Amino acid sequence: MESRFLNEAVAALLRKVAQEAILPQYRSLSSHQVENKAADDVVTVADHLAEEMLAEGLAAIDPSLAIVGEEAAHADPSVLERLSSDCWIIDPLDGTNNFAAGKPPFGILLARATGGIAEAGWLYDPLSDRLCHAALGEGAYVDGERIRSRPTGEDEPVAAISLIFLTEEQREMVGRKLAPHYRLVEIPRCAAEQYPRLALGENDVSSFKRTLAWDHAAGVLFLNEAGGKACRLDGSEYRVDEGDKPGLVGASSPQIWDEFVARVTAEG
Image 1: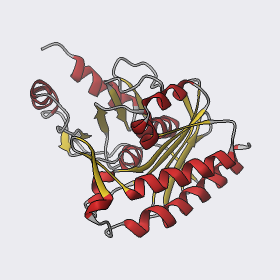
Image 2 (image 1 turned 180 degrees about the vertical axis):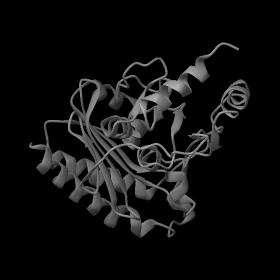
Image 3 (image 1 turned 135 degrees about the vertical axis):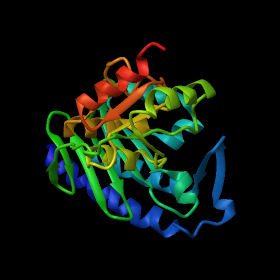
Image 4 (image 1 turned 45 degrees about the vertical axis):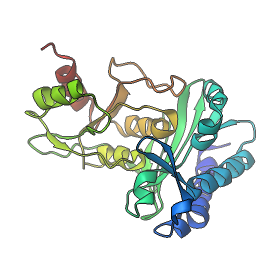
């Protein structure tokens, strides 16, 4: 399918799912509609309904692709085997903890991958109707306008780093190696928001400990196509079929990425 028509079809689907499955539940959830999926992680009826609608809609757009949904993979880990094939990758409601608490940000993340590499990605914010998308080799766009990643321009680059999932040793490293050189801010706990922040001049760099495909496939592609830099800590390309392999850094420019990683990996 030609890229423009694919994007139009996906954009229409994302808006339909947001209007019918997600927004009607926002700030309207009952306690029995929210379940604990793991430590510090919840799932809601909106997640399940959104994933069902997205899977059905994507199968209609291109039935040749396998479908990997976050909730389907949680229920059946064998679904993850599809990530090495041509597939759609769905995060039906990124930022569920925020959504369940009745606060932004939250969004939908969607990617299309071939052989472990994302070739197209969409990051949709239902509250603002902002749609970020990118295609491999074709650039990054926000609401149809091509964009170039831009740093914040602050004297101390802004580093969005969550301490929630870090060990005590890693937290100490942040304080010793990074705090003197960056203005540290908390992450929004929503990759659908964090990657646009890196490209649109709000944050300069962010590191991610959890790197599952549905959280990062679309955002990594979007940031790289915008002219920023997102890859593994060792400089290798992010692949969707590597599981929750640690070590992923995104930055608004290659220079900021290089400086950040040099500080993180420096001896002492």
